[in-house]
Image 1 (cartoon, helix red, strand yellow):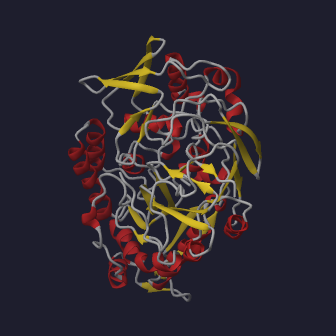
Image 2 (cartoon, rainbow, N blue to C red):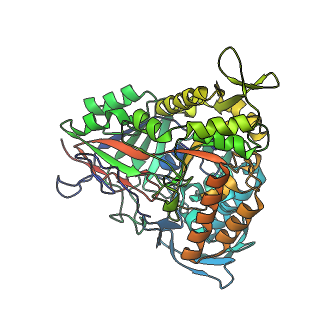
Image 3 (cartoon, rainbow, N blue to C red):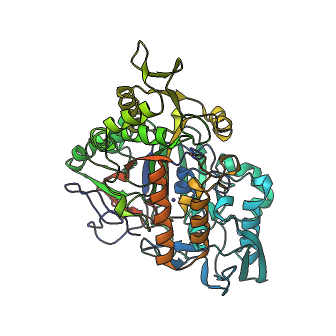
Length: 543
């Protein structure tokens, strides 16, 4: 998950024998049939079910079943109608006028209209909401004007090229205005009061176990990216929370679960070969798992120290070992399946422990203590990586431990310090750390703004984990956000990637794939543009 709350193109499939590479599981069982229950098990339960508040990927995945959006993003980066049938952008790029569907009703009976759009957008940016991500997505939002019941104009303070992408995400999903008026305080807990217009209703939640969704029989307004427009085929969707890999894999193997999320990479090949199972794999666009080095305090206020640490880590070897060859090492903060990825960075900063030694010697860390760690003026070169165990997958912990071992070889002590989420967030926001690490899924390259723009402060809902203050990077990101020319945007984002790598503001580690184990009875489970699983088109056979 995104832990930014550490806490977003056409995706590339990892090449696995017998692995399905399509955007949905196969339909070899004939035409879709209505009815039945599909059980999907994932590793993490949201602590907040309200995507207007939570920044977590898992919240977005789960609540996509309940909340529709104004537009939908296809995997080629284009946008299709959803709750909005059409839209016009003003010549100055500061006004978006949306014509809305007239046949949509929320599951509490409230009609969808322009006032509902305004109520949701106003709520996202309201300080009382304490949005950790959605408000950042629409930071230039000024106001929404209701032109008539089915026309709304959204006015921005400045041109903002990623605006349609922002509106397509679950984080800007549309709640019933009645739910916002009467039950806003209850939305975080997850349950029947989370009312949208989506293909499913959130019928119940048992904390620590599962969330149960039932079909919305009136649904007839699926996005242009869906295979069919009408109600979901499934009577019921059960999402179970099984944090242990062995339990989750065992459940899908035994038939207790139909789809298992986040497969351990080391078991993918064996699962692919198991009769009655298939593996769906889609490379995740967005920000790769990276180590963000705090540039505001020693030792990483020195570029040489950042370069030294990066040179000491053999990400290619660690990635291959930890993920059994299923993932590839990262060379940029962006995933290769993200628009504007700069492929020229590949293999430009290889593992060079000798260079790490040279740089550390040049910084004066030439002494060695009894444990073999470097020292200067009697002080050990010691750094700390903060993490939240509840949000850190087992394979990432293994990866972090391998990085710890690599740094030990050049005399750098890395301590992996676990904190609970309540403690982690204020410590992180105050900048009291050396390294934090996270990935962030999404199909919009403007994610680079969230993690490298000086205005994207952690305390304000941003994700500038390296605490970068680089005027050149800021200027490129600001320019990219205001131009709609795709080529120009790609060039600007490429400059940002090259500067980030040159300065070693972060250490990109690996490119992940979303891998699902799917039983034969489960059909047409799909992926969206962010490689998140979708269930509106899914159905189950009688077997």
